[in-house]
Image 1 (cartoon, rainbow, N blue to C red):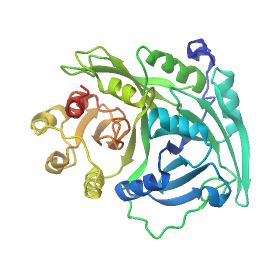
Image 2 (tube, rainbow, N blue to C red):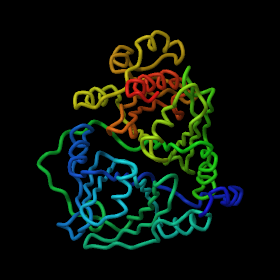
Image 3 (cartoon, one colour):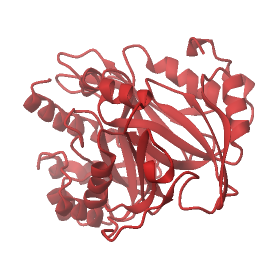
Length: 376
């Protein structure tokens, strides 16, 4: 596809032509996959799942898959003569390359999306081993990010063909992280509507929420965001774009240091955010600091909640409410030396929104970090 502006109108899609079963896995291209996997096990409570590399017949790269409940992360590093990964690392540093989505029919998913204007990354391919078969296909999205379609109805192996079960003595306890709630992408100036149209026309998503620079702004910076969701709501991709402000916004900082568009943060769900965040802090995960004054009036805004406010204040957990209920959320500091990828921990108590009431406090906290780095 030469230009996503040319894709067909969403009016042509009266049914969900791309039924998604959720996020299958997220793959990161990193400089040292063995160390990255160890970090996510230690800091976030993942466990060893599967390995692919020279010992499994793959000579050019090594991949370590880790798992926690319904979350699967894969860390891949080049070993020798792996131009695609080396180029990605040279341009972006460590970051998300693949957002793999589970489907019933990967060949049909590829056919449906490419017919509607999606640019093919991988034609449908069948991978087999003694545990069965997996069909995989994929298309390009913003920046160098890829959407893979994974069909694993007939596979019983640890992860994918080409991987072996990763047996490891060291498997720390779970931190209570459950699944991907949403995954946020940062795109360039005046590019958000282009990618909104891409998700609508190519993947059959709909825009369920929009925030402009009046909703997401501080004294110094602003951004705009639109939340895209698939038909059953299992997959949500908010898209951020910078907006004019007195100083550089968090999205501009990301684009500068990532050298282009890409995944800004991944929101991970939990059933008990107080326990999860307390555990993550003990493991060394660092979170943004929220001023204590935020908690002086937060209950006036959100009303009654089940949790005691004191531990939420001590941990820096934010609270917001919509017509369906409320949510609790907190954001990590970047997990790379470049100020790029970070994580959100979220617990939903009925709310389906994304914390609009917390935007000002959150972005002021982000600006303090930017200022400390000299990038505001």
